[in-house]
Length: 597
Image 1 (cartoon, rainbow, N blue to C red):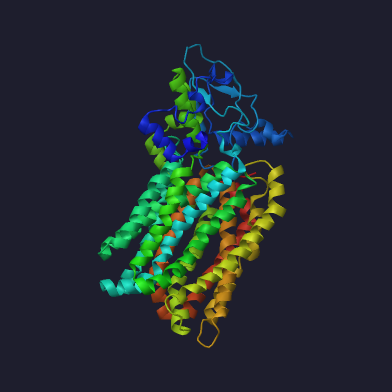
Image 2 (cartoon, rainbow, N blue to C red):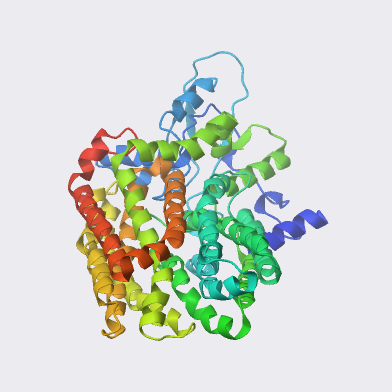
């Protein structure tokens, strides 16, 4: 029990405030602790990122027809989000006193013995890498009990749901805000647009911060989500429209770490062939959250006014924050090893004890970190056709999804006479679509993809384009669903027919996002974290824009014409998915960023 409390935010704060490490001690702080033999002597170190080093060793093992797990020296996960640039390892090596050969590694993160090749007679105190104590080290997130990992996954789902639902809880309140503040529709709609833009902008900051060993993920989650909860309270009490809009933007910005690092948290705990299952389940909280918002707040706003939408967000966020504050541990392996190295230095007085990620970052300037975290993703989007396509397709799908917040009142209130509360109920059409998509994708992965990933070497784990097959099979469901909705949104056609079109649409949207995310993570492991952040920024910016231009577009073209226009765009994107499936291997072979076989 002490170990569980020690890893949480309240445990860390207790240790810090009272200055009593004996309350929740780490193994390194116990009198009986003995320094592992591998740390007793040091030597020069090849400064490669742990995950990249593991990937290269595993590929060499497959080339030699040797079991790859025998060459693994660290935590291997599919989303290689900590590598920065293929050439960085050469920079690090040139700054070290002498090269080395690393061998005799133990499987699954065991401590490797280091054999050095001396090339200099100059006496230098070489760094000694602090790693896992063995293959079954309980501090390694991959070795945590399954129930603990499921519990953390559940917390990430609740957290993500609370943030995402906040975007659409506001939608039913727009009319009351217009009446209360004398605002136009375009102004009132900024409440959703600024929120969505805020959680698209935030990952550009929170994603690289969460990868820093000295910061980690859980601290960012706890601090930013506390601010989010307080902002939700403020948005329920504010008395000015400008103040409300500022708070709505900040809500999105401080809620965005769930986009920036929640997926990486799951990546920390699950191996490559199990991660897609938990990511798929976690994604349901992000995709279904906005759909439930109008349903939850529609009836309440009708009776209590626009402030009630803010109160509902606060009541939902506060308990989730308390749960995370009391029970969420740090999952970033680099942060765990960074803290272990600090404790070992304090225990032994040996300054050469250091984690591998700290040693790498010590040679890196702030300008380099900014370039790799912020500039490199947009450079890849501009120069790599595959990444540019996935960004455009995700933006079109996301903008289409959010445009329905403006289309639904026109169809179901104006045409079919739904009241404010009832007008949100058609969003329940996404529920059966989500159910079908999740079951179909997980079933395909279990039968077709997982067996391949288990026997193929990382980071590609086989032919990556094959993972796009579900997206290819369902890609034309998006235009079909959109055209059904567009051409049946009429007073003389029963309202269930356009809802069926929405269900078909959502199957395609969900599977397309899963396939593209998995494809990027496998083919661009060194840049995946920052690429996902850039993708989130692009699609959220498009969605924010769609919230503002959708109603004028529907008023000018009609709901049928406006949604048909979106259907035409989705056809173009569907053709792109097929081309990526057929020619993606050729694009990877020509790309200077992608991993190619």
